[in-house]
Amino acid sequence: MLGVMTDRATREATFRQIKEVRAQAIEHTRKARELAAQRRDLMQELIDGGLSQADIARELGVSRQAIQKMMAI
Image (cartoon, rainbow, N blue to C red):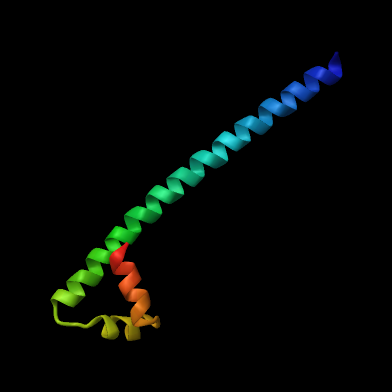
């Protein structure tokens, strides 16, 4: 009987840990989306100010295609 109790307690602890990790992953995803939108807005401000995607890419050290992708998401 003690083995069953220990197994149950271990399982419950594992489920609690899974739920916590899942909650953290959901929060991480929400924050990543928020930051991507902020990044897009900032890049759009630069473009509206006369910089090209190529200019932004050079400054950030990425390809122009990477900037296009960032702007499309």
